View 1 (cartoon, helix red, strand yellow):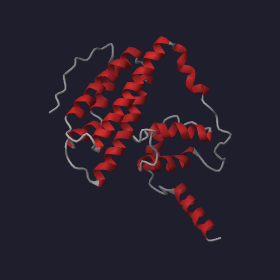
View 2: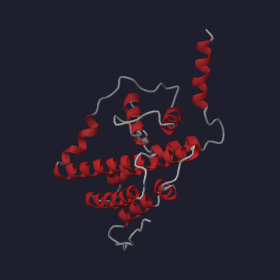
View 3: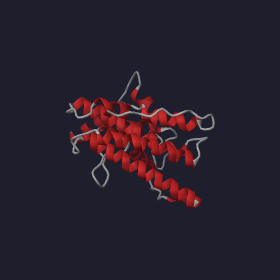
View 4: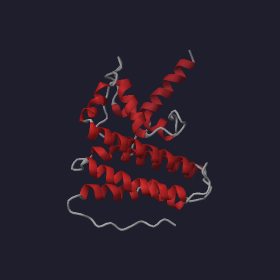
Length: 220
C-alpha cells in the first residue's frame, strides 16, 4: 500500500504545489493504483496508454511553467519520481505493461532533471531546440493543423511510434517530429487534440478524405 505524505503549502510556491498535485492525482497514477498486480483487458491497456501519454506531456511541461523556477521544477520532478518508484515497487510482475510504462516515465523524469541541471550550468543550452533541422516541406494551404492532428492523435493512441528501446513514444514526441516535418507549430497540442476529439460533427473529416483518396487510387 502506498502512503503519500502530506505537505504544507507554502504561499511562495503555489505553482509548484499545483503541479505536484495534478501529477499525483493524474489519470495515469490513479489507474496504476487501481490496476496494481491485476491482469489487463484490452480496454485497460488502451485507457492506460492514453493516460500515460497525457502524463508524459505534463512531465515535459514541468520546467516550462510560468512562475516556476528551475529549483521548483526539480522539486516537483523529485516528488513525482518518488511516487513512481513506490508504484514500481508495489508490482510483482516486472514485465507487465504497468511496469513498462512506469519505467518509461521514470526515464523521462530523470532526463528532464538532467536537462534542468544542464540549463542551470549552461544557460545557453536553452537555445539548442531552435537549432534543430527544418524540413523543406510545409502544410498545403488547403489543409490545417487540425487536419494534421486527426492523424497524430490516432497514430499516438494506437502506439504506432516507439522509441529506440521499444518504450512507447509520447504524444509530445510525436507532435514535435511532425512540427519539424511540416514546418508548423501547435501552440497548445492538448487543446488542439481535445478540440478534434470533441467535435460534434465530422469527427474524422480529414481521415475520411485520406480513405476516399486511397480507395480511388486502388480503383484506377
